[in-house]
Image 1: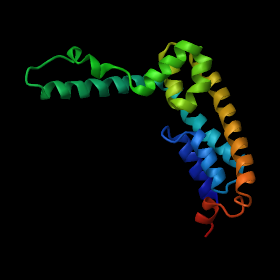
Image 2 (image 1 turned 180 degrees about the horizontal axis):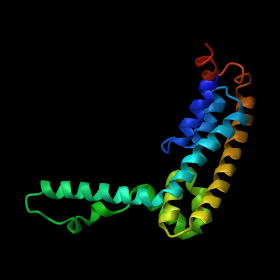
Image 3 (image 1 turned 120 degrees about the horizontal axis):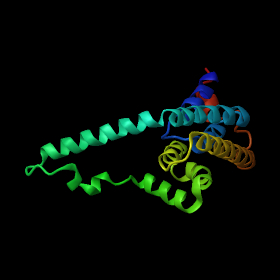
Amino acid sequence: MILSYLLVFLLAAIPLFELVTVVPLAIIGGLSPVLTAILALLGNALTVVLLIIFVDHVKKWMRKRKQKRMQDGVQEEDEGETPEDHGEEMEESKKGKRARVLFDKYGLPGLTIIGPFFVGSHISAFMGMSFGSTRKRVTSWMMTSLVLWTVIMAVATSYGVTFFMPGVEEDGVLVRLFKN
């Protein structure tokens, strides 16, 4: 059983999974909604705060990685074009573009509250920092957003599960998986 909750914490901490998906899956899997919500929030918040603290290091790493890819691409070209000639490769990702639209339309509060559902909490925090907001503002808005989404997902899933699948708490998939 402890392994199930450790898995919730770890999956929520990974940017790919996010707490908006981990919380419902864990509750449907038969785990306690309250403990699941707390652990998912802690896991996600930990990595978001670490990202905000070390955003400058992450940006530097991403720049070096992009430059290396550009240099590798240039070396493969026959005519030896420069990285500036490949403007389309320097564009933002789709999630980055979505985050920019959210930020431009709703500001930092909108990006941090709507962003975790559409682009992910880690990207929302990173983009909030990239768009010039302070660490303190991004952190406070992200924590507000993460608490809000955790409560919404836990309550909605908990009531939905008890309504549509009564008894899943005693015999959920995750409970059975780690029972023995």
